[in-house]
Image (tube, rainbow over all chains, first blue to last red; front, side):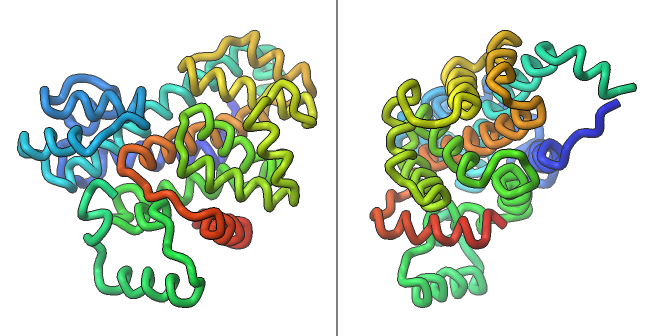
Length: 111
Length: 193
């Protein structure tokens, strides 16, 4: 079996920390932000934009989330989870395509 | 930045560090650097480790090539702060800023090696469409790029898809060209740690 390289190990450590480590938002909220799934009506627009159209995030998106009771520290965490979540989907999609393209090479490496 | 905690929520030691950087370098600390000092145990410490490993760790790609990938992914994401920061860094690393501008303006006609061009094309498609095929990967490797190089490029892509999103969501303030050049010099000397 191929050893995971240091880049991916450092990446997995980041993902594990933001999802499972201590925070001001709940692990469930962070997992939902990471996955881009529903958290609450006043936060969904912000989280969706972070993943899909980050250049369109506005002050009003943050204001709506804060008015609904989310603190700045919670938003700091949830925006990070949304950003890393989208990157994670891209990273995994790229690696999956690479492995599919090199399945013979993978077998050679294992011998 | 949009969250007040990212503008003012730092401890006295960190605030002093920011002030010293401003005084001794003559340039403000970029928001990208400030972000990783805010509650670093949550994001900054591990984000720096990963970004440094992707951008400066062992790889068959040069530092200049990886900075160009960062600028290119940022261009696809339309992230003005990261385009400015990493086109400046790639330009200094290549000692050829015109080359970087040419790639960002028109990848197809830019005077670069085919392997790098195919890699950038694949990273652009992945970032824009959210997926790439095995055929796309074969195309990159048929241009002379190894599997490990593709993996290394995907790590750069992951790092900058995160940073681009945070730059735009938190609203990183754009720097002057002089300040971007100063930041680039620092990134080439010290990396991302």
